[in-house]
Structure formats: C-alpha cells, structure tokens
Image (cartoon, rainbow, N blue to C red):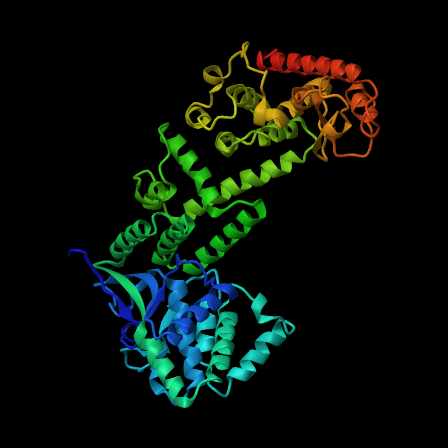
Length: 535
C-alpha cells in the first residue's frame, strides 16, 4: 500500500484530547531538556498568554503503521517538546483538580477487555528510566505531589532544583513549582482562561507518515526529519543502529540480553572516550576493507542502513555485537600498549601526534586481523614513515583506504606504500612538529619513557634580548624544540644539557645559543632523513 503523508497545524486540544498514545521508540535519546530549556518554554508561554498571542512550538514527526495499531504513532522527532507539554498538562491537572478535562489529556483508555488506563505518552528507550518516571508522575494526585517533592529533594540532599538536569522528575517539579507560583497570582476565572489558552492557542505542526509497515513509515519519516533539520541536530546514527539491532534481538526473544550488551558497549565507549558513532566508523572501514572498497566513504548512516554489504542487513545481532566488542578490545589494547615499556609504545605515541585520525583506521584494522606484537612493531614504523612523509593533509585517507584493503585481503601493503623519501620536505614541519620531535628523541636515544613525554623549548621569547640574533624562525625551529620524559630526573646526556642550562637564567650569549640550536636542528633533520630513507 502506498505511503501517505499529512501535515496540518494543530493545537494541543487536537493532539492530546484524542485516542492516540504517543510512543517514544527504542532508538530515541533519553529525555534531556534541562532547567534552562524548560524555563525558556515557561517564559515564552506566559509572555504569549499575557499578549493573547498564538504560540507555535515547532514540528513533530510521527510514523503510523496500518498493520499495527494506528492509534500508537511512533515519535520520530519532537519527543522532548511532546514530553514537556505532557508534564505541563499533568502539573496543571494537579493544580486545578476540578478541571477534569485536563486529566483526560494526560492519559488514554486502551481498547481491550480490561479497560486499562495508561499515560498518554510511553517511552521504550531502554537506556534510561524515562518510562518509570512517566508512570511515577502520571500516578501523582493533589494529595501526593508534596510528598513526591519532599522525597525527590531529600534523595538529593535538598539540592537546588535549578541544578537538576536531564531528568523527567525534576523537569516536572520545576514546571509544577513555576505554574504554582504563576497560578497564585490569578483569580479562578483567570486560571480557567489560561487553561483554555494553553490547549487552544499553542500549536504544533505534526507531520505524519503512514505506511503498511512501521519500518517503512519510520524510514520515510527519518528522511523528512533530516530534510527539515538540514542535517542539523539529527538523531544520532547510534540511535538508528541500536534500534535495528534491538529489533533483530527481539525477533529471536533475546531483547533483554541485547539491552545488557548495548549498555556495556556504551560504557566501554565512554571509558575509551569515543562515541558509538566512532566505534561504528572503525567498523565501517573493516567492512569496506573486507569488500575491497577503496572509494570515498559514504555517510555513516547511509552505509549501515542502506548499503548491501552492511552487516545490519544480513548478520544476526550477536555477530555484530561480537565484531564491535572485538574493535573495543583492539582500542583498549592500544591504550595499554601506549603505556608499555616496549618499543611499540613509542611508535603508537608518535602516531598519536599525527594531525588526523585516518591512519588509526588502518592501525585498528591491522590489530583486528592480528595481535602479534612482533608483526605490529615493523608495521607501526612503516606507518609512521609513510604518514609523516605524506604530510598532515586529510587527503591521506585515500591512501589509507588502499592500505586497509591490502592489510585485510593480502596482509601485505609495505611494498606498495613504503618507499625511500629522499626528498622529504623537512624545512617546514608545521603541525607535525611534536611528532617529529618525539621521533627524533627516540632515534637519538633509543629510549622509551613509560610515564610519557612532555614538550618544551630551549629558548623562550621572554629570554631573548635581541630579536636580530634569535628570530621567530629560530624560536619555532625543531632545533629549539625539546622532548622530555615526564620525570623529575635530569638525563645525563647532551640532549638535555642545553635545555636545562638555559631553563631559568637569562641567556648570556645569544650567538652561542643560536649556533647550538642550528647544530641541533641539522642533527635532528639528519636523523629524520635517515629514518625516512629506511636506513
């Protein structure tokens, strides 16, 4: 059956005094409106009421399925404002219990044998307690609201409600307290007038997509959402991937098991200081490599949702979670190795000083297919040699696509990409200076510092007497740049002598210092050139 679309501005009476129960689907984010956002709505609504002006709150996008219950549309966009309006209606119903119609706007009677009454909104987002909070708030009455307020604030040791963010109960309690104060200034007639204003003169534009199957309606609704928002604050790709995987798990009665797996993945990503989108980006490069794809990357969502090679199309949820956990283990191992006393730590830290993430897609792919350290050290040396000689340009990603393809499909990329760089441009090192300095430190001393490194300059501008002798070029040169171990011990070698001898006192002989920096610059560049020539 053909897809249908409707869009008609409606007031809150049309949206809440009907037979619909609005479903917040699994892929949505938790409720996130904070104190300031909720107060802005309160300020806007009360100001518009004072002027008797209609107030437009924006769009919501709904998806309905002809196959399932049409009275349970899924909220593709607008859940934050829809839930907040529901909180308003609930607060108003408690403040005006005699206004029975307000209570009917917060709940709905289900068409079943039990005549069950449920909240007007339902959250299926499993990474939060939003549904528990909705049920908790919905059950409140005028005699229990004060105890609810006391219980909530006592749990937080009498914290300031203004500081409570991203939590449905505290948004509700804020809204309730504002409206209670607002109502205290109104007569009974004015209160009724405000209720009528709220339900009749506040508008939303619901855009509804209806199809035979919910999946089809949601897919079209998401495309419209992206178009309306001009790819602005879209749903995160991770929300869509989560929903697809959850549906796969539910189809084999393993939904609860998946929820635990997903929560663990999110926790691991937080520990690694990456997003779930970042995790899927690494995954996409491994999949592309397995399929020999070296062309420009597609949008991450498009790749996983629409590409035929996407594991979301063909693989079961457990194998996909297994792949993601494998990548998490690789990233965890990289962090551990960076702190190790072995040589691999040095090469990983030099690569961390590179100016974009693209080489890491190849490194993760390499460690995904093999975890042999004996193989990893020469690989990392070659990656450093290749990436630094290439420069800091993001165009390196096209070469990285080829490298990933060769790593995964033939295991050999060295002959194709690592070559002597006899004419490497070391005259202007720019944003790669830290990486070059760290590389030169290791080449000069063959020393790995397990506690990490810090970067200093031998001469600082404040120490300079004559800018004719020590120029900006001298100060910015690699010869003036020093890598120091993060330790209080002063190393007993010439590498540190120049730095420490000029660290505190003013420079007495600038000609000597310039000469020393020049010599050091030449020495460092000779070391680097030899490295790039693979000697």
